[in-house]
Length: 109
Image (cartoon, rainbow, N blue to C red; front, side):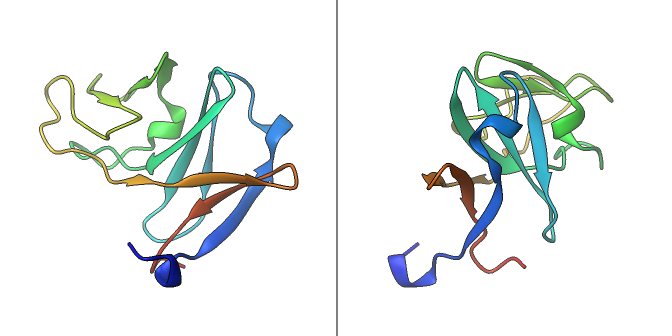
């Protein structure tokens, strides 16, 4: 994605997502922003196996486990790590600006 097509959306303050926590960005389709030991990573929020929010899943290191059917995904790459999921998640660039977490929502809105 070129710089001119980036669309940065403010999500929340840096201190508002606890370590091991996540928030959902209300775009269509939704994006989840995860705090992994102070690093913020963003993926599509919806599990690729079933329509369920990954922000509600179990986060350990840089993986998230869907709490519906226990599929695991890498938060860095979006790769599906365990069945029943076999399709990767889209990932999204995150930046910090003035203490605010921002995510590139691209053409979403």
